[in-house]
Length: 105
Image (cartoon, rainbow, N blue to C red; front, side, top):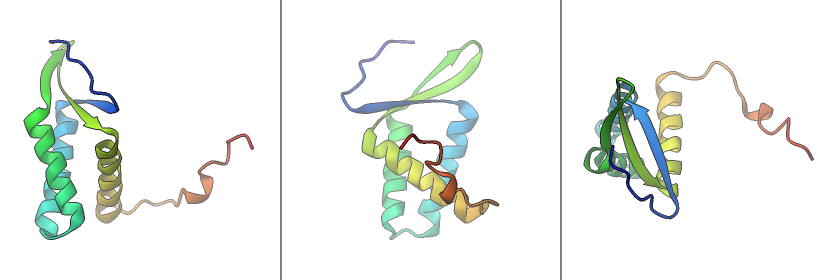
C-alpha cells in the first residue's frame, strides 16, 4: 500500500470490506428515508466521500478500506450510526447513567 500523508486534524478509519458495505448501506437508508433532511445531506456527503476518496488494499489476505475523515466528519458519522441503530434495532439497555461512573473526580 502506498503511504499517504495524513491531513492535520484528520481521523483515519480503516475497515474490512464487509464493514464498509454495511456503513454505505446505512448511509443509503438515510438518503432513501427523508431526502430533505439535514441528516440525509450529511449521510450523502459522507457516503460520497467514502466512495470517492476511500482507498482499498489487502492486508494479510483481508480486503480493507481506509478513509481519512476530518474530525467533524468522523463525529457526524458516529452520530448517524447511533441514530440508525436506535431507529432500526432499539437498544435493550439504557447506558446513559453508566457513562462516566468510573472517572476519577
